[in-house]
Length: 209
Image 1 (tube, one colour):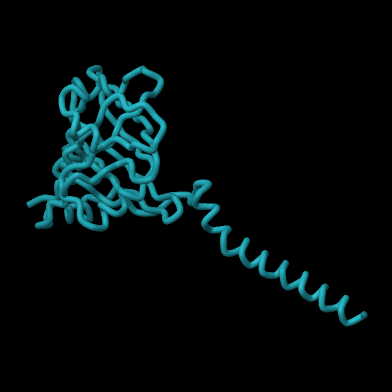
Image 2 (image 1 turned 30 degrees about the horizontal axis):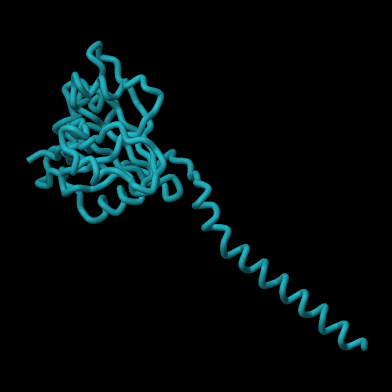
């Protein structure tokens, strides 16, 4: 049984490139494994739940790929089961490039990034667009009541394959919230030292009296 990622991605032209650049033998591991790697485990589910953005690639009828950023509050991508994720699609610039592409070709590829820890998860899947008139309960499940953005539709993606990428060349980046979290111990220590200095100053004044 081949790894689902290899089944999807290792086309003849890809194998030819691997052969030319000397990585074909190493990559055959993916084709010999007994684990298809097409189900989300606890590690993947927790990773997805912690993300606040995703890069999503679709392909148009004319063959041109299109990559779009999708974002929201942390946890806006919901793991519905081991083979399914979904998220609310918020109103944007109304060009509908991804939506239009998916209407013609439901295949989608996602990259989820954890910049501070230099981790990335790649997902391949089949997307289904959900409208309120089609499945109001599912769209409600995907919606975020406390996030002030208009939900136009939902995206539900059946996972066909997944793969963790190596951390090479990922430059650590931090969100405002992540920077605040890192600074909290330093700010607390600074406050403690400030209070100690004030206390020492007060004691010195008392000693002179």
